[in-house]
Length: 279
Image 1 (cartoon, rainbow, N blue to C red):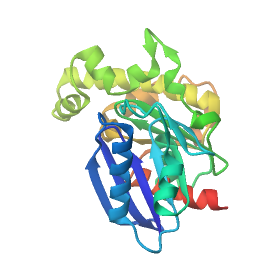
Image 2 (image 1 turned 120 degrees about the vertical axis):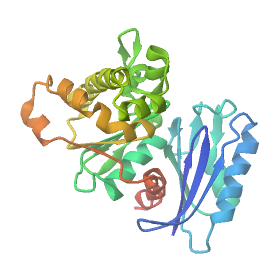
Image 3 (image 1 turned 180 degrees about the vertical axis):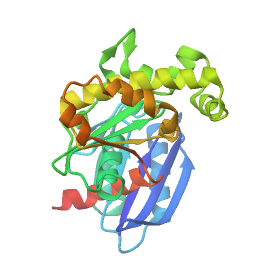
Image 4 (image 1 turned 135 degrees about the vertical axis):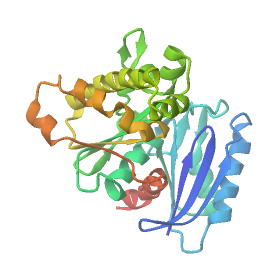
């Protein structure tokens, strides 16, 4: 058994995992505005409530830069007090089990490759679409971290008047159109022409980001997760139309694009850090 943790600025999710099954799960609001030690204790208490004697280790995904070797997280998104936190040291000191820390998008990509819609592929890019845009890279079946788990941050590349993240995350809807992504999805489902046009524009921007992904990694598969991916049907057509501008058609024909099948992929991916690092 393993513990998987998915830390977000809104919620903390902890799962007791065996194989590809989540045996027990706890979800709690993240006290993101509190001091660093209080947030650590919140995570630790949730793990304590889920812990089993047979747990071999703990894996945790965090939305930040991570010194993977030492388990130190830096400048966690939406958690102001977490500037530099020795998370691995805290978890191992409290629970006496090995702990492994990585970026949350990396955990998502790993989870989709092992357990999800990309399990038939060895070269995968996992992309989370939500408040921001996260990206994890799997090369020949192995997670590629880069320095401080920073590989794959293509959404920070300058694009138009800002960067890709501004046009491929929820901020696109509020900043450019004065509407939330949830509202746009609801209206589009009702056939609202303005909402459908907004999603078409969103798909075009996302298609340009995917083109950059293809140039950089030429993956076999791309997996989408996050809240915006639930509206895939509204932006798929324009996204694929934009991808047709990619010049290497044989590569494009082999590309599979899918959306995550379940909400526990990030937890499963975090737990997989235990096995991957034990080898």
